[in-house]
Image 1 (spheres, rainbow, N blue to C red):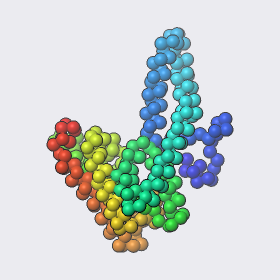
Image 2 (image 1 turned 180 degrees about the horizontal axis):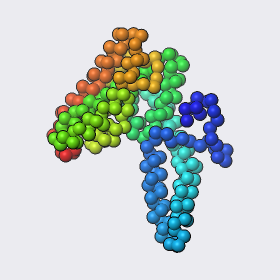
Image 3 (image 1 turned 90 degrees about the vertical axis):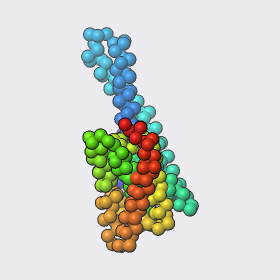
Image 4 (image 1 turned 90 degrees about the horizontal axis):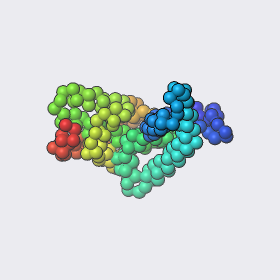
Length: 264
């Protein structure tokens, strides 16, 4: 997938159409799982039992594969293009509005799996100016959700649930947020929204400081490596993380009674 994106190899084609990869995507997996289940149940109503073991799986996979390649693929490609265009528009918005919105909602993009397309924008930013503000904004979004998750873990009275929540949150420190999102924050809209507010605060601070990275591919703690040449910017980067974390944490604590009821 990376080789195709870089232009070093040609994409795989079927009947003249480029086959779209679904690496890291969530929605295609959900849709395919539902489609396979639905088709299998439906086909079993019509296929004779003596042929069921062979015909039903064959038709299920064949029909699903065709739908995924020729319908879901183009839809996903269109969605990714829309995400890319929207992010470019947001980053260029005045008064830091785009920074705030992007850092608030970046983890919502991660939920869909479409965040892998953001790399294309980062490459463009680095080629154009040598800097990449999306690295900072993405980290702010992660830190906000991390703060919300840790605050939620402290609200859990069950030791096992608390331990699991903290374990799910730890990978966020290294730029991996899926365990935190699907294991903790998406259990309640209040938790996720609190993390989004934290991310927005970090986005606003990023705009005020006019902070941006000089590379891509690493975030949160590993992202510190992108600031080793400028100690002042490294301190600013850490400050963005701390502000995002703190705001996300406080927002959860302010709603503690309602959240405790939702996660109990």
